[in-house]
Image (cartoon, helix red, strand yellow):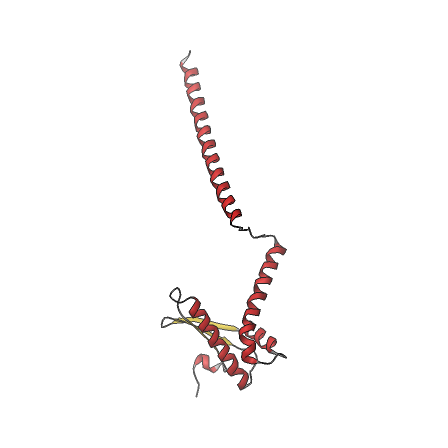
Length: 161
C-alpha cells in the first residue's frame, strides 16, 4: 500500500471518528432536552404562544386582571360605582417621575385632571395602600417604594415665592 493512500485512509478514519463523536454528542443533547421537556409536560407547564394575536391576548388579559385587582382595592375606598372606573383608569395612565433617594424609590405621579379635595384624599390613601402592599410583598428583596400624586406641579420643583 502506498504512503499517500495510507495517509488518505487515516484522514478518512479520523474524519469518521469526529463525525461519530459529533453524532453521539447530538444524541446525548437530544435525550437531555427530551427528558427536560417531558418533565415540564408532566408538571403541566406550557410554552407561551408567541404569535401576534395570542401574545396580545395574553397581555390584554394580564392587564385586565391587574386593573381589576386594583379596582378591588380602590372601590371600597372611593365607594362610588358611577365613576370609580374612570378615576382608577386615570390613575393607571398618569405620567410620573421615578427617583431613588435615601434608599427609597419615590414615584411622583402627575395627574392630568384636577381632583376634588375629597377624591384627592382617597387617591392618596389608595396610593399609600398600594405602596404598603408592594413593600410587604417585596420586603427584603428590593428597595421600599413610596408612591404619591402631586396635587400641584410646583411641588415637583419646590414652592416658588
